[in-house]
Length: 301
Image 1 (cartoon, rainbow, N blue to C red):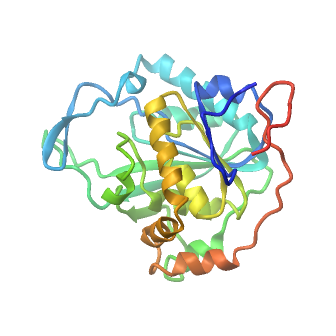
Image 2 (cartoon, rainbow, N blue to C red):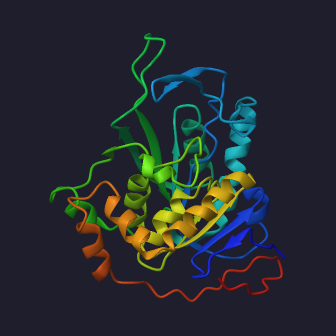
């Protein structure tokens, strides 16, 4: 039976330590939504700029490519397990750059997902291009796909339109990169901002939904999920990242911090719009029990 690395007192934030491909095979549960920020495989000994200083682009061995066949097989395997853990109407979001996103799109098609959108997240404060021989890399791509081509998915069209000044939300999002206050519990090399994850979660889930992040890192997905009244399960191999995740969850258990962070999330008209929406958002009824072993012994979060 799987023993959680961490389970919060309010039972809506759980972390597992290990390989997501292996762990996902060991329990039976269907999630409403998955967000995945898998390895981009861009650690190639290059140099970038951070806070005005040159830094290595290397994130770790987990981010180093071992060739096209390795990358394609890896993406196929984790996507296959994630597909099995989605509800029939569930959707998955995957972020990436040109280093990995074309492989992911190919594997999604092979596994018979239906790609709904390819969102371009335009960063308002990207690092400069040092080589000066190509355009500055100022965006990331986020693919949104649903499990079944013929089963309808949930999309909060009216809210997305409301926060976009009454116009249909486009697939180009101008949102800032991570803010300093989001790193209060430690730094993760590929941490995503709460503004991006909050928009993703609000667009494709309802209150009380269950969200999975198989490469959770510092668990921005989980923090956003809890701030928005959703439940979360995150998986990561590295204990140091899970420790940051745990501290971030404990940080928002302070109601003052919880409310302060919710007001700081970017992408809304003002700091009241999100709070007012959540007050009247209809919850979904969730009767599933999360189980952590092949015999389906109940382990209730």
